[in-house]
Length: 113
Image (cartoon, rainbow, N blue to C red; front, side):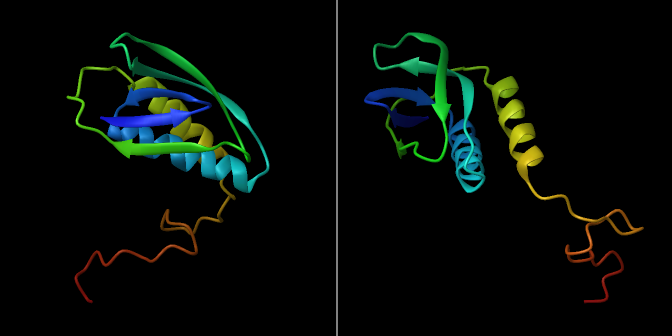
């Protein structure tokens, strides 16, 4: 679990959700854009529910490790949404006939080094 500090409040979210949220916020900031994110979380009082955050270029998000014991939060859908939205904001890369982007290193499928 990670403690997320945002807009004067604090919540607990999963490690993966925190990483994906920060990556999405960074991508939005690079595009001078913003979005609303819904993310399951645990409040400081121990309540579980959806949180809604506006993130963008001026968002100040702090994520820190915590000793809070991990609890079962189903955040898989929220993570998938943020990952999809992050990917949509990435520049499109031309694909080669091998299915890899032209700027991606071709995998060493044959062990030739």
